[in-house]
Image (tube, rainbow, N blue to C red; front, side, top):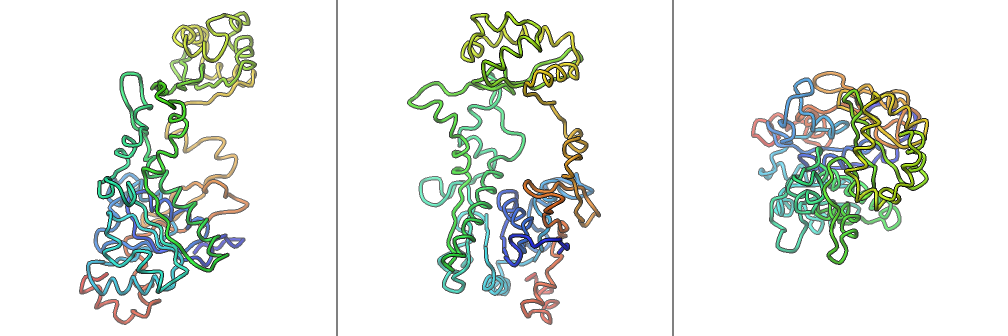
Length: 397
C-alpha cells in the first residue's frame, strides 16, 4: 500500500468482492480510496469481463482502469470446491463482502448473509442486483441502459423527437454509490452493535430515487417535464446557446433579479425584462423559441469567450461545453491539485483524487491490478503457500 501521511478512515477494514462491470467495482474502489483493503475475486484466465470492454488506456479497458485501482486481484474458479474453501476461509476474517453476481448465484455458493453470519457475525454483506429480491422482476436481466429505460429516465431525457440515454452508466453509478454509502453506514452501526448486517441494493431503487423531481412534477397525472435536449425542461433561459464563432455557451438564470440583470448587462436590452412574454419563468419557458432567437441574435455578434466575459461580469452562471480533451487540461482541476497518478500493468497513469480528498488529505492511490497479481501472496497468507502451484495446475486459481 502507498504510504499516506495520515491514517485513512478505513485502514484495517478488509473487503472481499465478487464483482464485475461497474456498480460493485465502483463501490469497492471508493472503499479502497478511504484505505480499505479490497480483495477482488476474479475468474482465472478471464477475470472481470470489464477488463475486455476496450483497449483505450495503453491496452487496458477504460472502465476497468477507472474503478479498480488500489485492489488486490485473487483468481479463483468458484465452481471448484477447493476455491470455495479458500473463499470461505478468507471471509472468516473479512469485514465486508460485496457481490453483484447474477441473481441467486451468491446464495448457491453459500455466500448469503444467512449462511455467512453464524461463522463471522461482524461481516457486512452487500448484495447488488438489477431489481432486488421479490416481485416479478427478480430474475430479469438488468444492464445499465435497461434500468435507465425501466426507471423512466429515458422518458424525460433527450429531444422532443427522440429519447436519449445518459452518456455514462448512471444506473450502475447510482447503485454503486448507494452501496458505498450504505456500507459506510453499516460499519458505523457495527461499531455500536458489534454485528454486521445485510445490505440489498437494487439498481432500479437507486435510479427511481434519482427520479424524484420529475415524478413529483408529474404528480397526479400532470404532464411530466418535456424532453428539451441540453436545456432545462422547466427553467428558461437555462441551457446551451450558440455564439458567433460557432462555439456553445451554457448559461443558467434562476430568478427574476438575474433575468433583469441579464437583459441589461448581457443582452444590452434592459426594456426586454419587462416584456410580458418573458415577465416570469413560466412565461419565458412558454415562449422559449422567441426568447432563444433574441438571445442568439445578440450572441451572434460575439465570440464564446466574449459572451462568457459578459456573463461573468454580470454574475450570471455559465459554463463552457467541455470536451474530453478539455477535461485533461481543465484549469480549475490543475489549480486545485486534483491530479495525481497511479501505477498499472502498462505503467503510470494520471488519476483524479476522489471528491473530498486531495493534496492535504490524499486518498489511497495504489496500482490497477493485473489479473491474479496477488493470488500467490493471499494464498500464502491463508496458509496455502506450499499448495499454490498445485492449485494453479488444477485450475483452482
